[in-house]
Length: 288
Image 1 (spheres, rainbow, N blue to C red):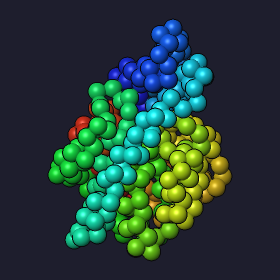
Image 2: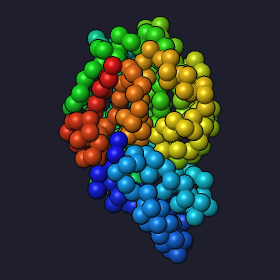
Image 3: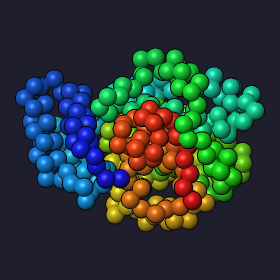
């Protein structure tokens, strides 16, 4: 996905957000924002995808802050919020007439646990209430029947945020019940509030899937030139790729991996228009 004009202000807003998470030092915050401005000025171009631009910006801002993981505390809070809600969701899905679809809705709502997006506030303080409200709206794009048809095979599952990844286990259960196998792909190092191998191991998530791979770096989304060969094979050989979140969407729309199912909330206007869907809409969209 290529950038829209408003992507620049959104990215800088996120830079300020993570600088404030990292330090109370006003001078260091200013230095980080100046780094973001400098890198953005040299990379912001319609010939580059948004994830490539944001990767370079965040990497240099992290170096300026001398902070490998500014979102560490928010990641813990997100996991705690999701874990609190998980048991009741499991019970509801097991009683459902269409458990696969309800699991898809649940994991897509989980994508709201995202921080620093301009004009969007993650419902971390009252996630249970927000979950119910979003669940009552349902999916703006609902291709769950087609996704289910392919999920009984070899599934490559690209994760996004902490907290969200805990709710993903609801869909893992449904995929495995269909006979599907799951290759989980997480970030190779901390970036934003995305899940890493360390996060997976901390919550024992590796037991819920067949294998866990990493993207090989802290790139935002999927940077194909940086991923290990085994991830490239997993993408190429999958019966279906399930891609969570906007960063993965923004990067994979630059490639032609198929079939691929995008599960996410369209939190900003440029992504919503790209899909296309309404801003704030929950989508489960398959491209074959």
